[in-house]
Length: 147
Image (tube, rainbow, N blue to C red; front, top):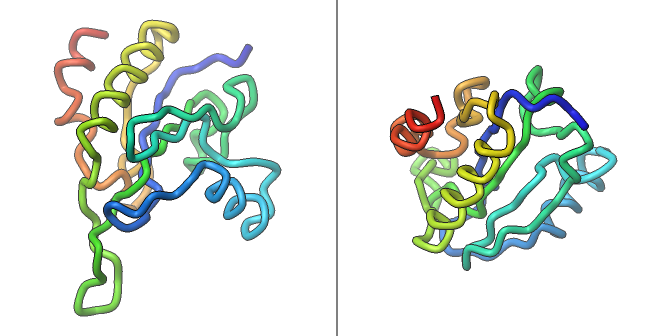
């Protein structure tokens, strides 16, 4: 088993309310990026379903320089329905209530299972907006309970 020291949250950077499957993301990662599998270990769908993606035993491909000891979780969404005036997607916390509930349950489970793991947003390691919200603020109580 891998030593897990980080849990990293992501968004799929797909438009608000547009359902995207785990298999679609796997296709993007395998066919377009040439990876061996989907980069995330879990994907949380709009209805709150948690899909197991890449096995936890395998190192993910979701945050450069921090994949070795981390688990990657992505929720579907993360950008507004329409592009901004500059033609770029506008980051937005688009998590549905079902996604919020499932994410909290999954994070709690993982933090209890991997006691040394800390929780982070992808944007803490990269100049990206992903996951389009402040993980440290949103999950402050959960993080404090884990310390």
